[in-house]
Length: 320
Ligand code: NAP
Image 1: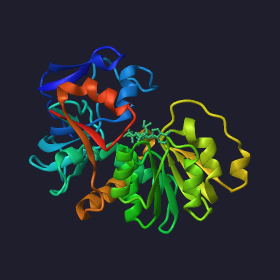
Image 2: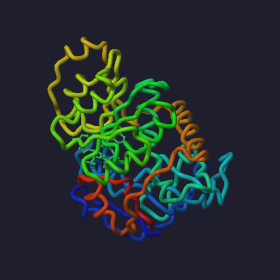
Image 3: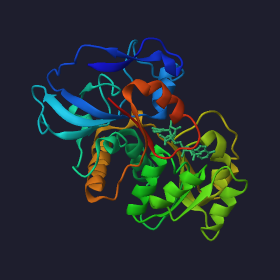
């Protein structure tokens, strides 16, 4: 099969399309023929070698894919050859024509959802769902601010929160991103490049502030987020690319909480809950992953530059 291989940590050009032996499913493994693979920021951090988690070289990047089960190994129950599926993690890497997976990381893909959309679910939708309900404990009727509502995690969070009965506000950095977030269900969206945008967003809550803030760039926004929370408000730190100084008094004044999350810490029991909810949302049409760009597998280097550039407009996927 063809697969992207990384032989040394470094710039995007370290990813090259190579011919490698087809993987074979051992006992308790599932082999998926990949029709689309999702590109996530974390894959760029790992490839660069700067991330604390570093796979053994050479490796094939990627967690999120959608396709058809090619074969199920001995002892696998409930998944069979021919099933349409999406993956939330792989053993051998998703930027490839085939990937071995643990069966708990393989989930049914409803017929109404395309393979490209299926590749947009694993990391972004699971992150959004966990952030909202397992970390922030959001409930219907609450008000949420989704930073980066134009991106993979943010657009997922907007759809999920809106379907759950929250009042949803978003931020994005381009007119196209703002339009996307509104289309996907945000009640109002603000331009995070505009001075004073957060004050405007708080004013739109009648000055009450947000019960929940999902933060994609905490090193830039966290100090101001704390001032934009309601009484008892929670900020979930999903993304951060550096250090920042906060005034702890802002948390005292509102009985506020800052909670972190990493999908790498997701316990199996919580993972099962998250994906049961996502599969239901995909089937009933409330979750509709937005695809921004489809590129061939050989364009993996270009996809890593694109996912780290401003102006998000949905998910970037690679098509083997
Ligand atoms: P993405 O699709 O590239 O989207 C990035 C988003 O961040 C865009 O919507 C972008 O908006 C927005 N953004 C840029 N500058 C911003 C600012 N100053 N304030 C607020 N938002 C800003 O990436 P993603 O897949 O959604 O991931 C978002 C972040 O979460 C990344 O840092 C990623 O590493 C992290 N993440 C963490 C976990 C976890 O387990 N903790 C899981 C998944 C992702 P514009 O482009 O419109 O300006």
